[in-house]
Amino acid sequence: MGEQENRETVELFAKTLEGGDTDAMVAMFDEYTADEFVQEWPQSGERLRKQGAKEVNQNYPGMPSFQ
Image 1: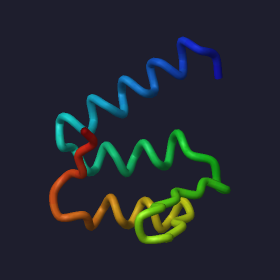
Image 2: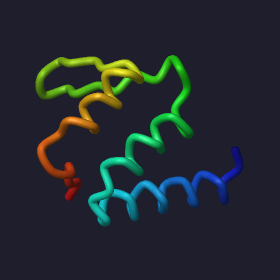
Image 3: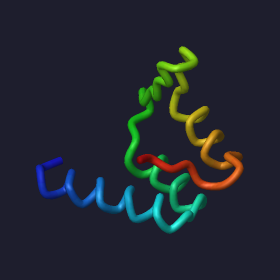
């Protein structure tokens, strides 16, 4: 994936967050994450693999925000 493709992916991710579209966020996990994807949450020490991260996004009350 080249720099332009990376930029487009980040912009799509940001647009999805801003739009609050949970289904689109889950679809992005399927399309853009590798099977060995791991999301780390340093505050709690949790490590979520791809399926766990998808489930968090599917069941999160509202859309997470990043500021």
